[in-house]
Image (cartoon, rainbow, N blue to C red):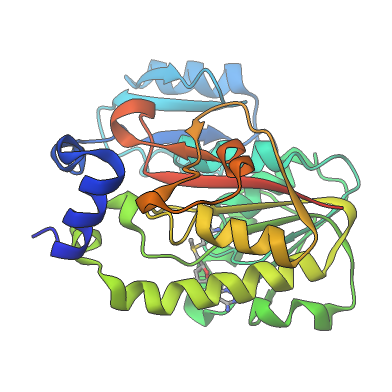
Length: 297
Ligand code: SAM
């Protein structure tokens, strides 16, 4: 079931024991939507309905759902947009990007809008989030999430984010939640176990082009957050190391997570890639996730 390619890669990167954890269950999590409600009210309402929740200590308003009497996507509060089901590492990505009031923020690969709606929430209704995605179908989900979550400070366009320069705008913050192999989501998507080098041949060139476009529209001194739900350094540290060398970016520290790999497969990447962060299902209670916080110098 696990492709030979991944089996070999994972053993070299993380040791043989890692394979055992690939299908470990990961608790679902929610993010309180403070555009619609406040944390105390929502938590009380869900606990009254029989939800058992545990606060994620390193996110602003994320909770793991320990158990619930029925599907967490079938409550009145969910339909009213009081919360979104969202992995804690994804929540942490937007918080790490750190949009400030009145910022102009670009979300380059936005649909279905988990992170777009969070960025809008962090802006507290000020500034603007420009949300791009290439997929017509996924844009529909994005628009419906914007409306359910009460987001009013977002402009959403279906377009190829490699053409972001055509917008003629410079952004304070850029989020690139890059299309990737999704190998970090094997616990819920078994097909993620079957990925191999052919998949990387599609994702990596696109990631390199997207990060170049993102750096191109970022203001000097502005911040770009690059992330993927992949365990593979080909889509993480190796993309970031190239982007830093080619597009005038520097790597900033991130608090939570484990250091990025500076010598994957025995390669020599710049030591600063250790400032980037990795998240693991069996250690952080999240999907497999990678993030890098980059500043344009
Ligand atoms: N950020 C989203 C969220 O948190 O809900 C998830 C984004 S998903 C990881 C990657 C997205 O990239 C997909 O929706 C896909 O349609 C989009 N995509 C792929 N190629 C793209 C391109 N060239 N320009 C813009 N979006 C692209």
